[in-house]
Image (cartoon, rainbow, N blue to C red; front, top):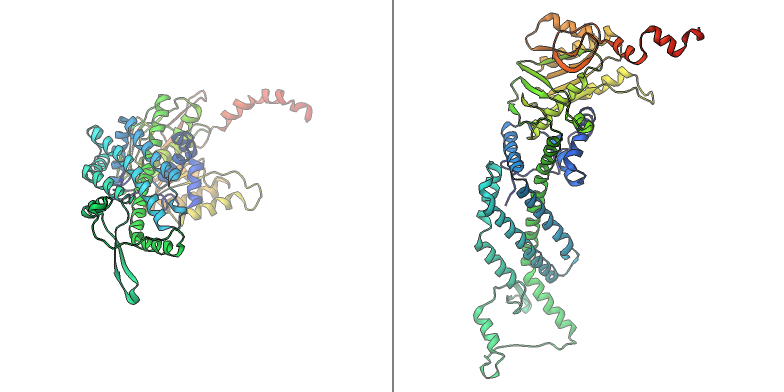
Length: 516
């Protein structure tokens, strides 16, 4: 049996996924605030945390896989108690094996066989419960993934399977002794030892042999209780006979254990998604299942998109934004300092990763094209060890991005190349961004480089869209990002006056006149 709850035709490989580039993943986590999302999904469960981190950081770019997971998650949300029951069942099966099975410590073949039989008998109880859940709740699920999962259980775990398995496991307890077939080999040594099924006629004769007057003729021998060599020889014969069966049973146990482990891991992702859904529902903030488009499209349409990490940290509703564009490769975002530009940029990246992982996004409505990969290049603080200059550090970090980025990827730039003067920073940004969009890279760029923004605005290109952080006439920030041409100021004076007041207040507050 296979799980197939993250992919339609294969199990999710948790050992290889999510291990692409450690630096790249750490940048995504730091710049987009993903650690807050992981924690909300995990609810202090280390296993779920590890799973959701792997799945989200290995977001998909296959449209059918994304939609496949969306439907499964909808089923999970609608049938949460049932999904939790299956998840806990998988955990119980795994824990039972850990607590009860000692075959791994045994070098004796018969002990290995006995431990494997005991383990499989315990696993049969969990498989029976899984079959019972499938029979009872099959009709409550609508997704292809769960329908296929339950159908496979019904197909494989039939009553005939259970009765046959239980009978065979009972026989392998050897309550009536071990039946062996062998041949004489060279030097009259035994060879081709094989374990036989119990023969009903032989068993009847064995029972009758206890009645002296009905005792059938047979050839037997017995060992003296102190004949250690003879006992060891018989034990070796028995071990050689059951060796193959012991290995098969051990493999069967491993196979069932792998099934439960895979089931637990894949459901852990959906458990995390349900935890996040519940957390956001309690905050009364909107979520929706997005409408993804193919890689080669350029679609960005959303209503009420917000920074989910900020909502989780503050514990309240945050300002959402709207956008409705088709065919745009470059988004240049300018405007007032502390106007919500970075928060907006984070919301774009978060939504993209959540969408491509196959779950809901923080918005009233959201549709966008899929991206091959997602990169961030955010402003970093000065290197405290002074190993390199600020611009040098930015360019080196960007060089590593360029070596990995591919067509149809998404790049989120936040105040990149602002560590030098306006003219040089604008020239660097202009050349880099032109090269990126020529190579079919989708770019969101938050910047105060007015010369750079004006250069693209003056060209009036169809594939470039301009956004600006809204500022009211009284200097108040609404944290709304609206369509608007770039302005030559970030209104830093608003911040100055907010902190220090006007010039007279500043002089009076800090008593600068007495220091002149």
